[in-house]
Length: 495
Ligand code: BGC
Image (cartoon, rainbow, N blue to C red):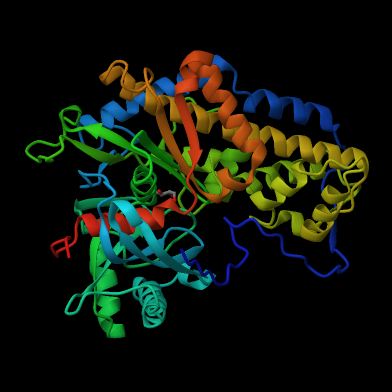
């Protein structure tokens, strides 16, 4: 198998630290003259972020109840429970050359894969990853899709070697588009709204495949989208290709979401639509979940200042885009009200999204006695000079926010499994069931992963949780989208 990769840029979801030159930090005076101590602020934070078992249980139950309500009728709950039109999962028989295009966060990826059927499986794969310039996240639909189509065109030009397309065929693409989309068929869907900091004008309410097709035409690129999938759905398909026990897929990266295999007869809102397998994949869009979450003033203020206030509350509590920002808000309060970093507050600490989740991860990894790495990160990123005590407090704040996120994500997973088990006694908990996970947060943040797993085990108990395997499937969503393009190819598969 050959794999090539190109530039990854530091971004919201990536886990690379940018080293800024050691400039002299700018300070503004502390606003408060009668400061309080750090302790009461921390105690309140711990209390409000606590996720004891009964709270986790309530979250899991509410998740299951919201799933049912969303399946009963469109708009029935926070969870959109979107039909994916993916009715058959990869079997291993898929053959041929397929492309995948992945737009979902701060990077977009293009990939090609040569599938060789049951024996050869993935014969070759190549991908490229490009970061999306910040201005395109706030630009027009045309600008964004032109950028993507031009990246795809450049990548397609380099095809060669082990990749071969039978004569006379059009190249087919699995398009992973990781935002809430109301699918209208396997290869079309209307964007409901942008998430994860995107605010592109002119796309909401439009068919995103049509947007891509128009951009490809402008590039003179002759390719066809055969499947439009959410990244969770791509991940489920990619993981299922190797393992028949995969029933759920979860993304924990810049944003978050989950999908799962559902029985058609458990979807009352369907009316009329039939799937040959009797099952389909449902994209829950669980980022919009909001019931019973332990929220703080910092969450509320971050939400109010966001470009989508009142929306994606679960996502804002547990996903990579937001954990760093919540911590920054706590630290700013500790600096202003309790002089955590001395009498003056570095200006930079007031900058939204200055502190990123990868920084938290790096700080939590610091095992040194004097928290040397914590000190350097605080200085380099926020211009903060810190003593040992302040560094310890910073790590404690990171841990509080990350623990809450990981445990709530675990509760969400149990909610989904619980709903599936209730509908099909024994078929989930009575045998091995795999939850496929992907996303930079899950992949890189050991502590987060540990908290997630602990919550799942606490909720399910030791015995049942032995049957639930939470498995990281790296980059499964790209291959998964290509596999779904193959399953929905307009050509006869056997050549
Ligand atoms: C989007 C989902 C996506 C998730 C993970 C969320 O913001 O709404 O569609 O699956 O991020 O990328």
